[in-house]
Amino acid sequence: MTRAPRSQDIAATVIRAFGLEPGEDFFIPGGYGSFDGVVKG
Image (cartoon, rainbow, N blue to C red; front, side, top):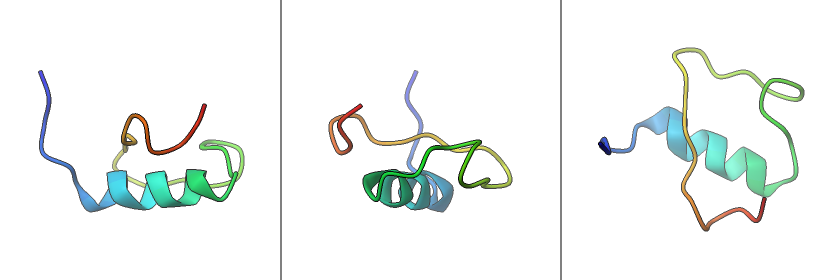
């Protein structure tokens, strides 16, 4: 099941695009996801 994107998802995707890793370099309260295909893993 997919859900509508939230502001946390957008912020996490942008931050990851700059090379920062979730849990190590940043924390977003409330949880988040990221958009597949935007940031190379």
